[in-house]
Length: 373
Ligand SMILES: Cc1ncc(COP(=O)(O)O)c(C=O)c1O
Image (cartoon, rainbow, N blue to C red; front, side, top):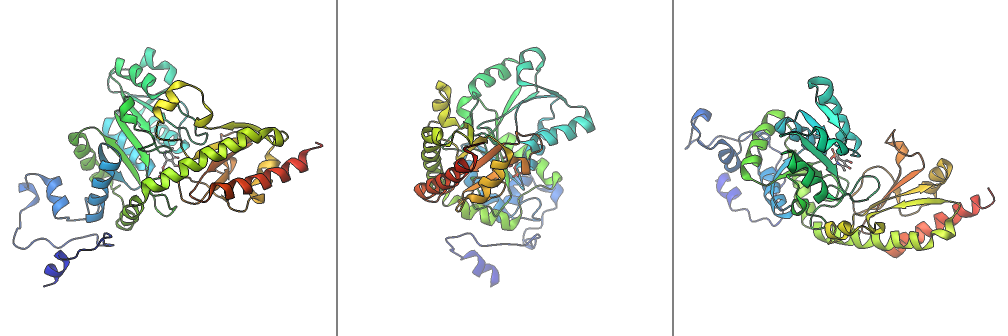
């Protein structure tokens, strides 16, 4: 009777299902060794949630549509990158600026297994078949873009694979596959999640075969997304495009305000970084549907950075990005290698005029304090 009731559920929102284990179908007892297609079988009839559960399968299907490929979901962006490195097992990785957590994983693999690390400028000289070329664009914390197509040509000339961390501009803002990416990574903790209340990551690949191989690895790595998190992510995806579009429109207004008025804050603002300020042609091609809602400002002193984050009313001072609420971060708080005068902005879905007023008032106060220095 209970089974019948469950099967008739017609919820619009997916149910929260926290079970880690599932009763075997007593009418269909097939030993694991005899199951022909194990992955399809556990998707249809979950056995244990490390392997699959209803909402992880559902979220993967939705993400495959949203991200234009075959999506494999993980319990964080970092574990998605670790899974990539485990699966493709390159002898060499080529990368420059990347999120520091990604670099730390490469360092662990170098420490344990001797992975060789090179800069992107060494691709022509040292890259070989099966190597990974990894780029992050737009780049955290600057929000600036690098040319995917240019790197893809170099990587493919050497039969290496190009992985693109597209966390800061997921589709529809940027579809990295259109420019030659072989694997696309997203920290779903950011724009896909969008509410600062879940950790998740995704690898998107071009073929079902690759996705299935990654899922097989994931079962053993134990890095499937959790039950509650996949429920939250499904909730988030229902407003995803609307949120991203508002955030992207807001950031352009805000960066434009700062850039056009920066002479009023000449004792405070040293430099503004954002893809909307880049003039290269590839930027508008790559980000044809809008800019990332992350940008950075270099202030004239660390003291100004400390005061600025306290003078703001609507922006919270916290790390992370991509949520509906606007954040600022004096980046030195979490990244030991960054310019100590850098403030990162993550623009949310609030009214852009309110945010501009807030920035104006904090910057005016700082400018007055610094005018005679
Ligand atoms: C660009 C980028 N990639 C990857 C990650 C790692 O994601 P997670 O924190 O979900 O592990 C982050 C986290 O901030 C990020 O900003």
